[in-house]
Length: 182
Image (tube, rainbow, N blue to C red; front, side):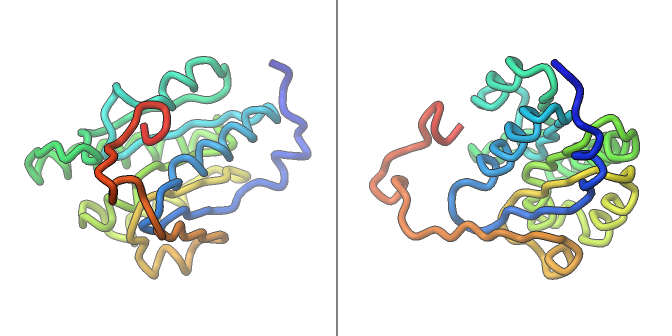
């Protein structure tokens, strides 16, 4: 893979939020990551509240040399129950890894997938996420995804997109499908 044009990197450094009750938050982040990867940027997606196996994006990222995914938690998307203490422990471990990645300067685009859900579940405080974002290396673009973004994060972010649910196949009893929902 040829390197990235350094002029592209000089214009990076914004914070995006993809939120809302509609489908497509992680998918939008993946699309941005795919685009950035195509331009030679180094991309990493750290997934809060998602397990190491079972998601199509993990399979796809293995085919790209500059797009890494690291799942860091239990599967909340499928209703797996664990203790709150374990949730907090794994979330804090995810925050530590996020800080390492953001401070390293190794990645041009860092996607913190489902971190907003960690806020909604009160596993993190908005001030902790803002402090984390403030620690990032210069010219590091960041995407946060998940439902229920708090006002403090909306205020801090440079771009906030809300996916609005109008209609979903779940309403017809159609469950999550491989390759489409996961």
